[in-house]
Length: 586
Image (tube, rainbow, N blue to C red; front, side, top):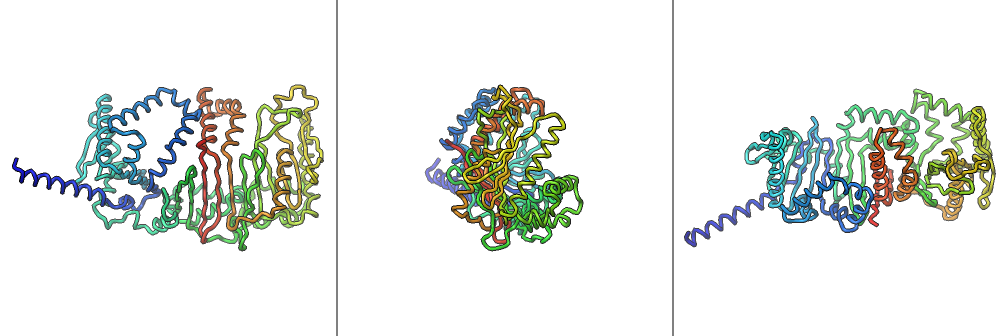
């Protein structure tokens, strides 16, 4: 071959390679290949950020130290999976972290479309590795098809300039430059290829709701999710769930402002950010209208600076909840909110009428409460001299803020003692021991506690579950504490005394705040592991090994999460929720 001809050939190949690289780099954003009627779309634009966080040295050490991981690592199927990963690493000449980063580094887009169609688009950083990976999967699929004597399951089809493959006769996929396009149905892949051919077609980016949701999700998130609520709400199960939530008084009160916002919205946007060991998820919906007769009207702060009070912190806290709910206005509008009076609501009203001596529940009882409502759940610390139950429940307490505590304290005390008396009367009819009432002090606060006596029980190390409960009523300052145990009531008296001295500031614009401590949750699960395993075997018919694996998985997951914090409120008229998950890489 002459030098001139060799030079021309090399130049031609170089131009061809440059054009191929340019074509790969000039692929339009993946969302332009998603049909406009997509119901849910997930776009992971920075997969390497998430990969580095969840597969770094600290995360890997934390995951491999989990009992759940160790248990799974000893099983044959897990060893087969590890052998498969090792085989892929050798074949692709890379470690799995580097390989996964190169295969997905350009972004991942996942979409759920009508007619049960699922689309997955993966943009690789290395097209050579993508083709090697596909060839590896192709050979494995052919080998498996030959074993099952179904060689026709693996085949290819030409669609203009694109070769489409199927490995099982059902799914369809293709590689276009550095992009892998997968669909669970051939029709799904065809729709993507048609949008590729027609850049001016009706794709997801031409949808106004999608553009608004993307803007709301933030300027530079790691990942975003778009959900078309106008389509989702047409699904019977979701429509029924929203209806039930609004018709149930307790659910309507707890989820006030949330259900209405979803019901009145056309889209939902989620944005994910990663910071060190934290995952931060922001959710927004576009529903802005709130009818004065809806339950949301009694959950949204109306005045400037109004909002929930910070959650209370006590020793051994598992979870805490703070709500802004106007109980008086909510209950006053019950006939409009819930025209069909349920048996539960009627029973509640009858019991309240007994406890509060016939006082009007709306204008004489609930009117005395302020909108700030808080709940605390904490792990109990049992006194061996009193006794230790076999099953150990966490303690919980409801904290309300009163408008006129001086006049209302005795009304509450009378109602509480009537409730204890009713319990004792009912248990007495069944020849069962009742509660004994005592009124000790915690500092300068006198509170009331009811308890089951253990004085005549010799073995106090394995008591009945009723000994988890020592109901207590305390009213320090302007606060009302209804607690399942006197221990938690004492801790709350101390905490509220400190809070009163510091004058806590409301969290403006926030109407719901939830916090969960993963370590404490794992502790209470571990404490009751034996009982939970037995319950799993009875309820689900699991073997002991299966039940132990299920409970250990819950404990491992709880240990892996250090803290969860959820805030819900309004921002520029939009309902916004911020979820912060701090992972435990210790």
